[in-house]
Length: 400
Ligand code: FES
Image 1 (cartoon, protein in one colour):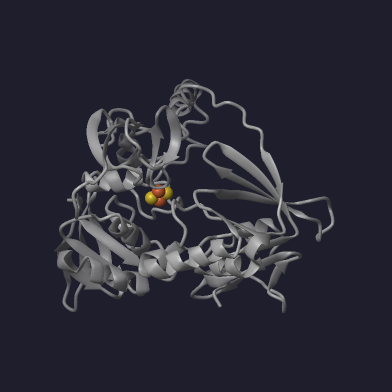
Image 2: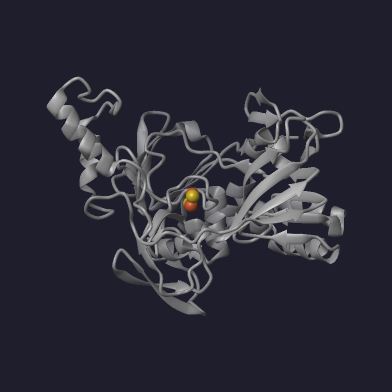
């Protein structure tokens, strides 16, 4: 059962699937929903299995919802200010009883939608109609959004990623630099482990003259013209605002993606990455009264400390976990022991493992990657630290 550690100070209300819930003004929707013990927030697109927030960093879509008539809004990237109408999407029925999840029972070995009844005329017509109704994620918005003109900005240095490396680079580049980060707050995982250090780094970067933006997502990188050394354009979005930055120096400090559990049913609502759990903790939200920790890493060590009174087990060797237990949300784990297996009851599982570098923007900008066993794909850098002409990588995304 998720709950808040401290009473609300700036209480606001919003609707979730018709129920009136409370929230701390300005916190993310996911914080408010987990605090209200709502872990099941979405359904998977094809088999309609229960999904919940895993990452709290816009990377898993387990918190994708319809908010104020707009589909596919990520609750972990949306602040609550009161008065919002939040609905579960992609269900027939409710998020707990989704009739479309019958697909999972009807096709226990998986479903190939490309061939299903393809050669049977009547059946194929019916299945096509049904598939068109239920396919995709979300329904069109209640109203078309106004067309927004992109703002264009020339900058000397554009930094993407506002964790420790990004903030240090911004402080060093000073007024030449503009920094973007898609998080609701700057600081990356440093903010979760050492919030005061992250705050000071932000202050230093601003004092040096750098412009810092949180909640701004760099969606794509484009090279001007055909020359590999042409200027770079970066398309960035912040709410309704679209900006096209043009630069000759792009510094990427995009960090890493959280490791995902490999044990069966590890995608059940109530399984969180260690980073996500620390985000909840930073907002004074505890995901459950009984918490199991699985894996290793500094973020999980911090979880062990902060949730100490709720931790019922820590399984360092994730390979020992046979599967997670639960139907609509996690209820525990089955773990191999010397002589068999045992069940551990837990309302939340926090997982940590080796993260993988977030190389996507670097590749869009022309970088090559190489595979390193135990790490994953990493951008290849030349002797100057360049991944492509004018593109530099720093911090944990380089796996250095
Ligand atoms: S995308 Fe929001 S929790 Fe993962």
